Length: 325
Image (cartoon, rainbow, N blue to C red; front, side, top):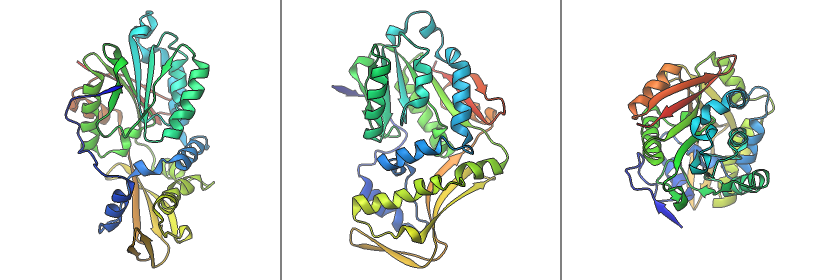
């Protein structure tokens, strides 16, 4: 049984599903689909493959940081033997691979609550983690963490540490990111902490190599969104008619992922026709990048007290500790 956390979430509840969002997004003058829908079972597996590619530095850099500084991140509440009263809540957990690095360093942790939209990824992680950490209660929550989330009742009264890796915060525009950080602060409660991964600004060529890999895995990940529409909504997309594109907008400080029509064409979804001109794009994802001081200022604006910051040897990626008053 769960209780709805009672506070004002920064985003209006969707109130509708995949089909409605797709039809709405493709009806706009600038076509757009939510990056949330990239992560079905196929997309989640493809993203796991992306994280192992040589040019995709974020996972490698963040993993190095977690391995080197995990004990510091967990803090005294884990290292002084009081872990039985602590719960780790992860936002957008996916396969939970990086989380294992922290769990290895938290033998007394009572409960791990991963939140993700992909139920199959959560179940795979639950089975793996339960076998490896038999003392740990793993309570997956299938949910979109940008919407109101119901947490398990047994988190009540426990100190909460939030974990938000992978620079997923970068998928939100700066104002949205501050709103989400505010909601997480309230969700984790007074005295709560949040460990959040943030991709750093750097030479644009590093971004393009990471988001447009030579192996074509990122392209397959992006195109799977159209394949998902075909599978689940009976869509009529010809995947060969679209190409993957990733660009870095230096003024906005973000990588933009798109699906670009290679020719004039029409796709039918739910009895509705959607026309595409040659070169017309469907915007599928934004990935905002930050300087360290920029992110600390955003966190302060959401009511967090910024704490320690850890970076990798090349200063490609950062992990921030935020403390709730």
